[in-house]
Structures are given as structure tokens and as C-alpha cells.
Image 1 (cartoon, rainbow, N blue to C red):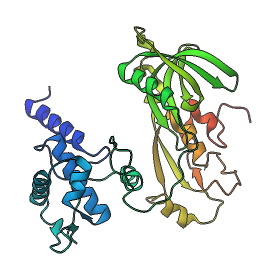
Image 2: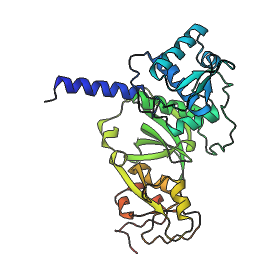
Image 3: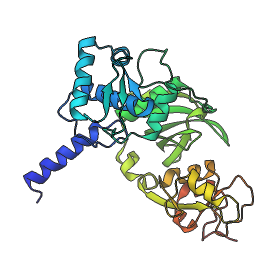
Image 4: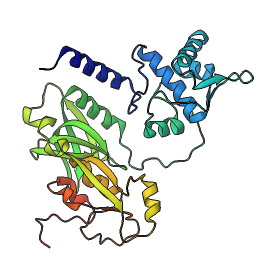
Length: 321
């Protein structure tokens, strides 16, 4: 039996995890502050860490707070982390100190998005990048009029009727969506397909129309707990391709520890991800194309993975040679 103290500790840990900035893990406990205060404190931390300075006006513009509130926020931040910042008396900017230590473990993905596109998702359409950048947007962009009913159905646990274009043509079907995922280039919907009677993936851009079927609730067998491919987590060992040059560069590009990048991915998504990242999945690393800089060191890790049909060079042990 779990003790009361253990339950309280688990509850506290869960609450602290909720406080993080998406993927961030707390280095300092901010649970005593309100959600709004935490967001502003993390913003101060973010600006100091990645731009080197932040002002009261930055806080006022971003969150719509008054000058007095902004001053209090900076006071609270300096109480929490006195070695992180100091006020430049000339510029009136709070600047980073050499002793700076971030409040949270900032997620690289969120940081790069914030720096290049603006911090947060507010109502203002003129959110400005924080540094000069150049990036190529996804060429495959879902239609928001299709995306919205799909995500509502996921949140509300409802059935959606869609028109879908596949290699065999266009058809209508009912699906029970429960998650979305991106393979690096395209967004997919994971759902139970009533037409085929099994779980599958649907590329969002191939959905022409989507309409929630009000009152039609998912049946037990259509719920995600029964999706073995989605629930199965893989750890795929990726290494520099043995037959290609620039091994050390590849190690650095992918921050490989001991020469291996351990990719954790759901079985349902594995084949798509390996395809998009040009990973040679053949047992004898036989793909000669220079674009394939990575090799799956243990192809047997894909055994029983339905999406492995998309993994470049992979052959199931059960397939005929």
C-alpha cells in the first residue's frame, strides 16, 4: 500500500512537472506562484538566457501588465535567482550575469520557435522574431478548417466523418481520432478507421472535409488503449553510416553519445521518421545514396512494426529474399 507521504510526494512531483514550459523541467520550484506569475518569470529567464537582456517594457508589452506589476515580477525573479541578472543603470535593462543559471531546462524546440517566430501564441498578429533568422516553412501545411474539427474530436472523444484521398482514390470514412503526430515534414492523425476495422494513420493534407458526428461515441475497441502500435515505444540505435565519410561530423550533428543516437519513437511513427531522416535500415547498410548519413544498427528493432514498410532498405526476417 502506498503511504500518505508517498502520495503527497507524487502529487507534488506531478504538480511541479505541470509548471514547466512545455518540455521544461524545473530546476527551481515555482509552485507557490500563480500561473500568470510563472509565465512572466519564465519569460524573464528566457529573455536573459537567449537574448542577454530584458526590460520592464518587454514584460509589459508581452503580457499587458502595468509598470508596477512588471517591477514586482523582476523583484520576484531576483529573489529567486539573485545571481542571474542585474540592472544596467544606463540602459535600464536587466542584463545577464556571468553567474546566470536558468530557472528551468528550456526545450530547444520551443526556444527556436520563440526566437524565430515570437514568444507565445497570443491574439496579436504582429508578434516579432527576437533574432534575425531564416527558415523554410513546411511545404505540406494542413487546412485549419480540416484541422479544427479533427482536434476538437480528439479533445472531446468523438467520431469524425472525413473524405480522404489515398493511392487507391478518394473515399469517405468514419474515423475515431485520438492523436496527431509529425514525422518531421508531414502531420498525421492517428485514429481508428471504421472502414478497415483497424487503427491507422491519415495524412492531414489528404483529408478534404471533416465533420464531427455528434452523439456518436467511440466504442471500447476503438480507444487508444487498444492500439498496440501506438502504445509500443521503440529505442532505435542510429549510428553514422559505415560506408560514408564524415563520421565525426555526423556524430556532432546529432549530438551522439558514444557514437550512438538513441531515437525513442512510437512504433506507429517509426517508419515515417526513418524515411524522412534518410536512415539506412538495411541489415548490411547497402544504400549507397550519400543522402543516407545514418544507419539503423539493429534492424531487428523494427520487427513487428507495421510502419516499417516505409523504413528505407528494411526487410522483415519473415520476408522472402
